[in-house]
Image 1 (spheres, one colour):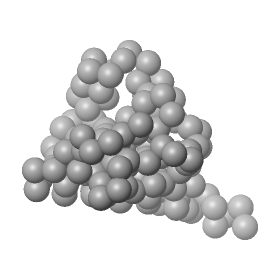
Image 2 (cartoon, helix red, strand yellow):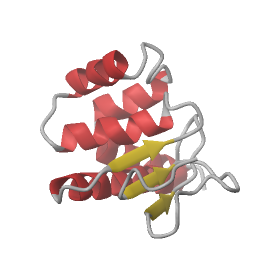
Image 3 (cartoon, helix red, strand yellow):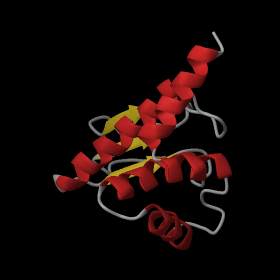
Image 4 (spheres, helix red, strand yellow):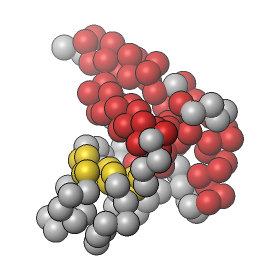
Length: 131
């Protein structure tokens, strides 16, 4: 349970009673730990942008999912890349600081290597073709 240690909490799953204390900004964007569609990728991009903006203004940010290995790492990696980190360095940094298991979802690593905006466009094109 998160109390007030953070100014912004971003949650990538829905779980009753899992929110931060009242007064703490809470952004919720549930996504699966698997293939993401264009809308879900757009949400990940928005969360990373919001995290960067919060950090730039000196706020404390927590990004979380169920285990903290894939979904939250995807958001954090994209935020690091937006802040100028090379993709492979962002992946290595997350794995060294969180766990070697972080970003073990190879599809998420592929999204990062392609660039999330590019992955989003490709997913949206695929969705249009299958309609």
